[in-house]
Amino acid sequence: MSSVTGGARTTRGRTPLNRSQIAGFWGAWAGWTLDGMDSFIYALILTPALTELLPRSGYAATPANVGLAGSIMFALFLVGWGLSFIWGPLADRFGRTKVLAGTIFTFAIFTGLAATAENVWQLGIYRFIAGVGIGGEWALAGTYVAEAWPEDRRKMGAGYLQTGYYAGFFLAAALNYTIGVHFGWRAMFLTGAIPVVVAIVVLLRVKETDKWQKAEAVVSKAKPLQEIFGSHYRRRTWVACGLVTIAIVGLWAGAVYEPSAVIQLSLKAGMDKSAATKTASLATGLLSIGTVLGCLALPPLAERIGRKKTLAVYFTGMAVAIAASFGWAFYLPNGLVPFIALLFVLGFFGGNFALFSLWLPEQFGTRVRATAFAFCTSFGRFVGAGVNFALGAAVLHMHTLGVPVALTAIAFVVGIFLIPLAPETRGQALPE
Image 1: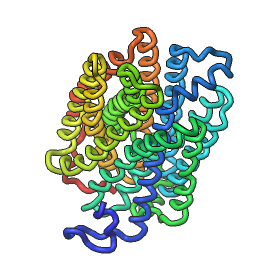
Image 2: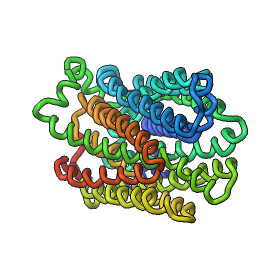
Image 3: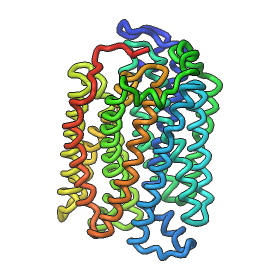
C-alpha cells in the first residue's frame, strides 16, 4: 500500500495525503481489520464454545443443538449489527472520529467479556452488544475515508479500506491456528479486546473531516433519518438497502459456514479433529487473500466500466462460486481440494463490499451521509439475521450444510436485476 503510506509526497501526480489523513486511514483500517477478526472469531470457535456452554445451560451438546444454537447466536449478532444504524445520526450530529472510536470501544469490550460467559444466554447478550458496535464501524470508517481523502484518491481509498475486514479474517484464522488450538475459545475472545487501543488512537490523533466541519451548522438543524426517505433520496436509499442485503446474505452464507464445511470435508477425508481445525484456518486464509485481491481490483474496474456494471460482474461471480462450492464440490467423494480452490474464487468476488464503501458515500450529501450508510448496511443485517436463522433451520431439517447455503446464490441473481435501478456515479465528485 505504498500509495497510502506515501502521504508526504505526490505519487503519480496525485494529491499527497497529510498526517491526519494517513493516521485517520490507518485508524479506520485497523478498526475494520479487528472488526473482521472479531466477526470471524465466532465462526471459527462456534462448535467448541457451544459444546462447553450448552450443558451448563441445561441442553445436551448434540450436533443438532449446537447447529440450532449457533444459528440463533448468529441471528442475535446480526440483529445487533442491524441496530447499529443508531451510530449514523450520531456521527452526522457529533462528528465522524468520536463516534467511530465509540463503535470500536463497544465491540472490543463486549468481545472481551464473551470470554467470561458461563452459559449460552450470557454469550448471546455479549455477542448482541458487540454486534451493535461492529455494525457501526463499516459505515463510519467508509464515511470518514470518503470525506477525508482527496477526490482523486478516495476511490482507491475505499478499496484499501475494505481489505481490512478480510485481513481480519486472515488474522482470526492465524490466531485460531495458534492461540485457539492451544488455549481454547475463551482466549480467542480475549484477543478481541485489542481494538480498545485503536479507539484511543482514533480519538487522540485524528481530526474531523473538513466536509463534516463545513456542514456542521446545517447538520445540527437537519433530520438525516427523515431526509433519506424524502423525495430526493427515497429510491436510492431502498435500492442500496436491497443491494447491501444481498451482499450480506452471501457473506454470511458463504464465508461464515465455510469453516464448518471445511471441517466436515476434512474429517471425511480421514483427518483428526486437530488437523481438520488447522485446515479450516488455512482455507479461511486463502478465502481472505482472494477477497483482499478482489477489493483491490474493484476500484479501477469501477472507474473503467462504472459502478453498476462492476457490481453486476461481482454478483455474477458470487452466484457461480457459491453454487459450485457448496452445491457441487461439497458433495464430491473427494471434495476437499476443489472446495478449497473454489473458496479463493468466492473470496475474490466477495470483494464486492468494497464497492459499497466507494459507491454509497457518492449517493448522499454530507449532512446525511453517515446516516444513509449506516441505515442501508443495518437494514441488510436485519434481513441477514432472518436468512441465517432460516438457513440453520434448513440445515437441521435437510441434515446437510451444502444445499441450503448453495441456494443463497439465487439472491445474487435477483441482485443483478436490481442493479439498473441504482444511480451511476462514475466520474462525479463526492456531493457536498
